[in-house]
Amino acid sequence: MSILYASLLTFLAMTFVYAGLLLLHGLRKVIGTAAFCIALGLLFVFMELVGAAGFRIVTELPGLNFNLMSPGLLLPFLGAIMVVYITDGTLATQRMMIGMIFSLILYLYLANLAKQLVGAMSEEKAFALSELLTLSLRSMTATVVSFAVDIFLLPILYQWFRNKKCRLVIAMIGALALVQFLDGLLFVIINHLGDNNWWRPLAESYLANMLAVVWIGIMTGIYLSRIDQEEPGTGRRALDILFAFFGNYGKTKALEADLRRSEERYKLLFERAGDMVLVINSEGMILNANHAAHEIAGMTDGKDFQILSGLAPETWQNETPGPVTVVLPGSERVLELTFTPFRAQEEAPPEYIIFGRDITRRTRLEKELEEWRTRTEHNQRLQSIGRLAGGIAHDFNNFLHAIQGHLDIILYMHPVDDENVTRHLQKVEDITDKAATLTRQLLGFARKGTYARTVCDPAELIRSTLELFLPDDSEAAAVQIDASAVPASAGFRINADAMQIQQTLLNILINARDAMKNIPQPDRRITIATGKTTLLPAFQMLPPPEADFNAALEYGVIRISDNGPGISDAIRNRIFEPFFTTKPVGQGTGMGLSMAYGTMLSHKGWLQCGNIADGGAVFELVFPIVSDPKDI
Image 1 (spheres, rainbow, N blue to C red):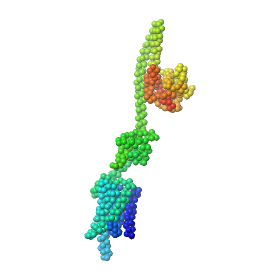
Image 2 (tube, helix red, strand yellow):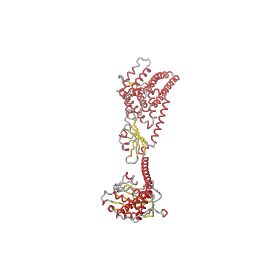
Image 3 (tube, helix red, strand yellow):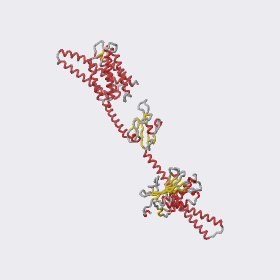
Image 4 (spheres, helix red, strand yellow):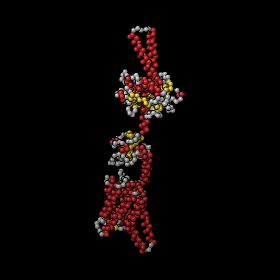
């Protein structure tokens, strides 16, 4: 029974020793590697002393008699070396091997030195020590040789198993079993040299050693499955560690230093990049995110990219995902995202690198540039048409004067008794007057007309225009005019041609009346208001490029709005063009608003239009305010 307890205690000791080494190895990133290396060194020294003493446990059962050093101490030591090889790589294993070989050489030197001291002792003591040293040197030589073979052969066999696609636990057990067999074989051959029964210790302990190997392999597999390992086993040859140890240690060390510097440069580039850099899995979980991703979009490790971006997984799971422009949910930020798929391992699910750039400002500038280009093209069109209209009107006005002159001569010098002839001549005179009126409008649009400007109160101009608009127009009588926001005095003065401004206001009122034809008469409403731009609510100053705008001046506004259908975007871009009209043929010339536009520009102001929130169109006449008589 005591032998069974001793065997169980040996296996428990082996388990605790190996578990302690694995615990120190798992904490190496927290407490450093010194504790693990010191513990491994102490185990190495103790293992050599136990091996030299030759402690054995004899159970008298076939295959279960074993040396205390082999399963109890050597296997945990070899298992720890393999864990270092698997998790930390070849260079770290080479460093440990160099330290162990140096320790073995030092151990041999000290043993030889002790043997030389035997001669200085008494004969009785010298004989006893000589026998002990002879025994220990032979055992030590066997231990050194077998152990040296172990540390070189173990990584080679493990790598060979792994390259044969064996699972990690199987590769670990297979490598330890073969090394344990070869270790025991070399040890008994050297330690029992000349003994015909040298093989007997090997046969007596094979079963115990195999049980210990399997248990160490299982513990190693459990440990490695629970840590984030960087197994360098893929793509290496079995003898690489042997070649690296004897010929390329310096090169391997230099490569590791280069790799470390490269990783630092990558980390610096990743973290300090001005653009977003993300790594996500196929489900959209963020695995890595740099500082810019957090600052721009609030994306950090562990968050759901799909929720933060509003993109469906199909966007990046496409075989060739292209650049995607996205507006972040709940934000006005516009991002341009590029997805690059990759696989960390051959059979692993795909992951995606995302490069993101904040293009909010660029998008806004492009939109503003497009709007400016549209307005500029529109204004250039207006200027070209204005110059054309002005040239034609000037020449046409000369023809009208000639016609009117000859008509006056006929009526003055040749009295006509025929009423039909008189009626036709009167018709010609009326048409000539209308043509002259149209010519004056064209000249006003082209800013070639002559204006009689005086300092006016906009409120008085509005009242006089309403007197012209309401009584003489049956349609206008059915329109409700809300001028309650127009006081007796507008509170500011403008320098304007009263007749031209009245004509401008009348044109806008007529257009507002016509826009509400499909609305029941009791519901038609035109609202007029005046005020300074700084006081008028919901006012946005939109001077066109051709306006003589001066930011240092103060401006006043006459606002006319209706509750009609409003102005569509397509019409708004052409509404001030000459001869453009939405009215049926024969009901509009298309010159009313274009003339009003030209009149406002000639008064150093401008005319702008838009839609109001409640529905309907709004026209705003913007004038520079006269605050000093010198401004007249």
